[in-house]
Length: 123
Image (tube, rainbow, N blue to C red):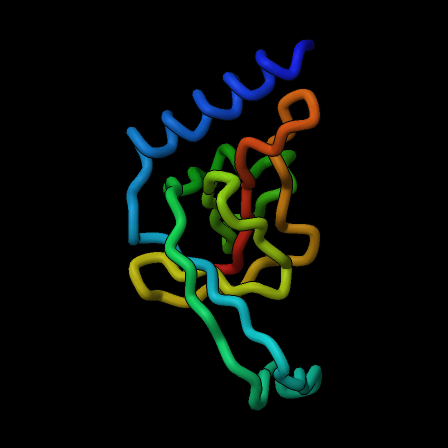
């Protein structure tokens, strides 16, 4: 595949997200400098920065979770490639905070060009 095709495919992917997704309703919160207490499951200290992303969040039907890596108590959002999410980030959907599951970030790579990301989060 040519680089021109890859660039166009990534652009189309982003345009579809912008058309059918929502702006400002999904954010990524990156926390830096915090300490994590594993026994309590909480972070202490540090600072956070929220970044609004273009994306789509939708309900997961029970039949989709069968034989899938997604469980019923999890959800999925698809965002564009403007910000690369980390599993340590938090996902905010309509201001409600969710944690990203381990190995819950997948890049949509079109011939070497990242067009967007799928994020699996804990409801």
